[in-house]
Structures are given as C-alpha cells and as structure tokens.
Image 1: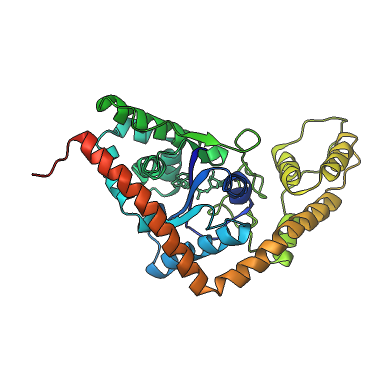
Image 2 (image 1 turned 120 degrees about the horizontal axis):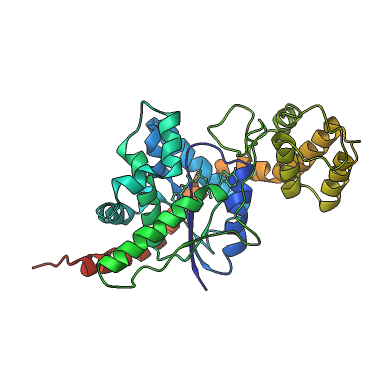
Length: 331
Ligand code: TYM
C-alpha cells in the first residue's frame, strides 16, 4: 500500500479536466492505498478572493469531490487550511528553495504574463507549498494531470535537498501518477490545448453545468471547414474534440467519427451533437448529486471535521520528526 496525496485549488467549479486528470484517479485509488485528498484553499489566495468567495469555493470543491464519488470513510478528505502544519513545513522548505529555480518554473512564468500587476511571493513559492502538501504525508504517488508534472519534479528536488542537507532519507520521492496511462491533458473547447477554469468563456465544461449550457458550449466549439484529403492530420481544434470524445464516449463512437474524418465524410455538427449527448450523460448524475449534497451542511461539516482530525494527526507526526532532524530542541 502506498501513500497518495493530491489536491485541487478552490478557485471555482470543477471541470472535465479536473475530473479526468485528477478525480477519476482519486476514486480508483481510494480503496487500495492510504489516500489524502484535500482542497487547496491557501493556494487560491494568490488571486485574492473575497472572504465570501473563498468560503463558497471551498464548499463547492468539497461538494463536487463527494458527488464525484470520493468516500470520506476510505480516503482522508480535508481542507488545506485546517492543517496548519503544512505552513510550518512550507516555511522550512522555503529556506532551501532558490529564487532562480522558482523563477524558471513554467507556471510562474505563465502567471507573470497573465497577471503582471499581482506577482506576489505566494505565486513564486507556489511549488514549495505544493511540495509541503505532498511530503507532509510522505506520499509516493500524486495523481495529477500533465500540467502538474514540473511541480512534482520540484517537490522531489525539495525532498531530496532536505534529505541531503540533513543526511537522512526521511522524505520519500513523490511521483506524478495516472492510474492506467500517461498523465493526461484535457483540451479546451476554444481550440486551446488545456481546459481551465480561468481560460476564455466557453473553454471549460463544468461538472455542475446544466445540460442546455453543455450543449451550447459544445455546439459553439471551434472547428475548421473539414478535411479535404484522406487520412489528413487533424488541426488542433479538431484533435481537441476527438480527445474529449475519447474520454467521455464509447470506443465505437470515437472510431465511427474518426473513420468519417479519415474518409472526409465527417459532419462536425453530428459529431458535436453526439459529443454533447455523451458529456450530458456523464455529467447528469453528478449534477444531481452536487445539488443534493450542497444542501446538506451537516454532512459537509462532519466530513470536514473527520478529515481534519486524520490529516492533522499524520501531519503533526511529520512536523515533530522534521523539527527534530533540523535540530530544534526544547530546554
Ligand atoms: P488545479 O486546481 O489547477 O487542478 C487540479 C487537478 O486537475 C488537473 N487538471 C487537469 N488535468 C487534465 N486536463 C486538464 N485540462 C486539467 N486541468 C486541471 C490538474 O493537473 C490537477 O491534478 N497546484 C495544484 C493543486 C495542488 C496540488 C497539491 C496537487 C496544490 N497542492 C499537492 C497535488 C498535490 C493545482 O493548481 O491544480
């Protein structure tokens, strides 16, 4: 049995990228491994949410975790800010994280580009907090999408560096993980290669989207004028639709449209209609559960309290040992 840790930032509703990149693996792993899944609310502070939004977003992710099938009796489900030991480890790791390597991180460079007026220190040290989240539980497997690969590499660097500095092998190496294949990236509907919460309007399909909205978003997805040569390479936006179809539709459906593309008989309208139907079939039961669970505050309180206790117990143990390794001693 391995120790597994993963989290999702609480910056809004979850989308199909979060589901297929992360949550699908959480569900598969929860009965086989020692799992800690959390809501990364400290990480969401880099964009300065209002107190009301902060709380609502945390609640929404918790509701959607549960609706998607996370079992709080099997995995430890907790809120990052409930486990303040993470902050202590973050501080300690920051002493051995260097400006140059943090500045070279791709996600930092992207943020600098996207929000030039808010390049705060939290953004720069984002991967250090993420490493603390992971190694506080001494995790070896971290189910994430492809976009988190570099962050995992940095987590290994910080864990290794700690081990080397203090001549110990205390922290194991955490690796990014996808249950059955390579790490995945779910594309957006606007032709971009990644579905994301903060991308263009219409880029993402959220788990809680109304079927009518889903249909509208998919029917509006970017396409080209169609293939003109047999077995022609697919342009990005078409490849994106096929990649979405690969995860939500039956293999036969995918093969049918793929063949139609290859022999130039494809009608994108038909393909989108089928894709919309399949996405709706996949999300409809989730949406129903989301609505049901979000009204059950008592249950949510219970789940959060249970997760907090279990996660804190493990995190406190790590912090106690780390303090000892570093040399903190009481008189
Ligand atoms: P976040 O909140 O951006 O995304 C949460 C998870 O969803 C995956 N994901 C995707 N996977 C495939 N295709 C997509 N289009 C797509 N969009 C998002 C992400 O890869 C991720 O697995 N830094 C993390 C949160 C975090 C964390 C951690 C994760 C904080 N501490 C410790 C693991 C371990 C983040 O911002 O993910």
